[in-house]
Amino acid sequence: MSPGRKKIDKRVTRTKEALKASLVELIGEKDFSSITITEITRRVDFNRGTFYAHYTDKEELLNDIITDMIKGFTNAFRETFKDRDFVDFNQLASSSIKIFDHVSLNEQMYKTMLNPHIMPGFLEQIVGGVKKVIMEECIYHDYDQALDINVYIHSRVYALIGMIMYWLQEDFKYSPRYMSEQLLLLMNYKPKHITIKP
Amino acid sequence: MSPGRKKIDKRVTRTKEALKASLVELIGEKDFSSITITEITRRVDFNRGTFYAHYTDKEELLNDIITDMIKGFTNAFRETFKDRDFVDFNQLASSSIKIFDHVSLNEQMYKTMLNPHIMPGFLEQIVGGVKKVIMEECIYHDYDQALDINVYIHSRVYALIGMIMYWLQEDFKYSPRYMSEQLLLLMNYKPKHITIKP
DNA sequence: TCCACATTGTTCATTAAACGACAAAAAAAC
DNA sequence: GTTTTTTTGTCGTTTAATGAACAATGTGGA
Image (tube, rainbow over all chains, first blue to last red; front, side, top):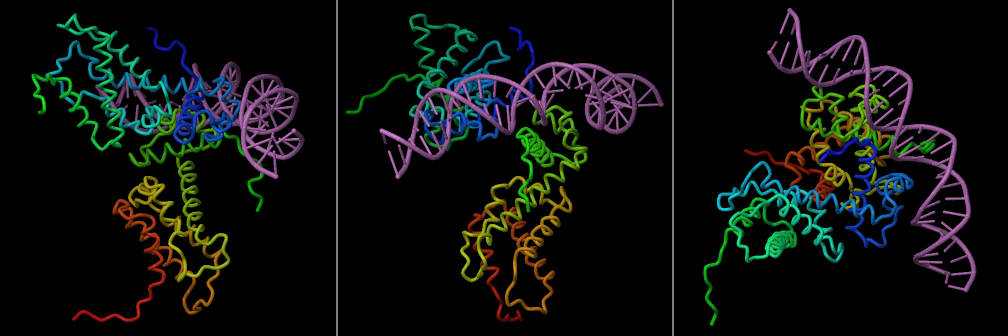
């Protein structure tokens, strides 16, 4: 409710941002377990003691990073329907989908953090964040009660993640706009019938 | 001689770097005279008072930026012959020329600062810096005394600047390595004779 | 295995940056 | 023209970051 009661010292935010950026860089270069506190602070030219003024260990710093990314991802996701009271998927402009722009803008970040070998479990947290947004902020009208809402949302979110994973596997060779259009097509596509290959 | 007697506080260097980066960005966006102190500090999230702790006005900050760039340029230039006692232009590897890598690495910086419309007089300072390095650190053996050394060096340095200006006009479409090779060819080229078009 | 060496967590006095305020000057808006 | 609004210097107080030290604990190499 209350938007951050007391405002924070510029120095604190700057220090934390620098430390986060440093760790993100290092994760992209070497194994998380082999990264030292000394390394994190030295890279962005901070005193080692300053680290301990904000975090107890590197996993706490990593949590901060993950929290930020979840927030960024869900906010970009929310862009599509904030300031609206309803959304018609058949008439939605692809330009109102911002999630691919967001991922594209933070390319390096997502490339390292979404790599399941490097950051196991991060993907699940993203899914959880988006699911929470949908559950709390969206109402599905004329919804088929027979379909479990949890199953439905989970599958939808994973479908989106799947698109993004493919996208960055292909090294962003499609534009965010093209991906947005693809997403719309995907949401509006309902297979009528199929034939089986002989 | 003495390598920086007392070492400086990390905070000071960080603050100054941030302010410099901020002004460089702003110069690329708008006229220097229309940039305010408030704007410079707000962009990098510093307190306005902190600016006055280091600089009296924006031209002093700009001088700092220019000094840095001269230093960076001349150092990159020096790379070619430091740790050597002589250089044979006929046998010099293009990989030992670092100036184009340096410019390429600081692309945006040079694009704005070398624009004579935006930063008049900056080019002359670069030339002066490089000339100083050559005069103080290089000895030209078997030099033709009839050719004024000032004239010679000046023309050489301007030739280099000319290459770079063309390079960034063409938006870095050649690689630093290619440019280094071109520079070597240029230095070793001595026209024997020409014929005149009828 | 032992040894040199880097990292860790913690402390404390010192210093730089933040904050908020202020009157005066400059720009922008009316 | 005059009235808002912004920017400018400057200052005292509070707070965060620094540097340096320390013993304790890894860690890698001969």
